[in-house]
Length: 228
Image (tube, rainbow, N blue to C red; front, side, top):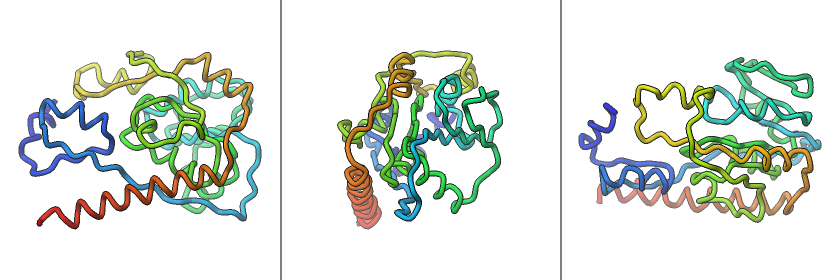
């Protein structure tokens, strides 16, 4: 709430997606939506294996709570060490350097990204850069950019679940504009247990490169013209 009170102190307010811009528009009509960039981690020399990957890192909005309840074999990377996982999950908690992340991203053929919300969502776009299949929540920062015929999207509903840290740490209302979009759990389960590939690896690579090319131009044009 304090941050919203300070919003008029700044010449520019920049957000990473159009949905966020609309949330702030009643407070600051001149908010700028400026998409972000993600690393291209593609390495054609790393052979993909038919494996599921969920890369949580240290985030609290990735919906890892639901992921670790699934019965399919998968790898979950989570440096928070918050979860107790069943035997079907290879639960990896040590911090990884960039070189190791690149290997992991390229090795796994399917990346699970059912986020409750994202301003951008590097873990999805970095996975997409490798040409991997993407399973993701139907949230604004993803659907504003992705060709949904090439990714597996899961319907969402906006709600609050206090068993999730992402929701419970906002009981004080410190983040008045925070939204939480929960995926359809049965649909998510069905996609994992009956997984069917869609599209081609090169099509997903092309989509990633197209998104990054457009976003790079927008960023460069904005900062080139900011003082004109």
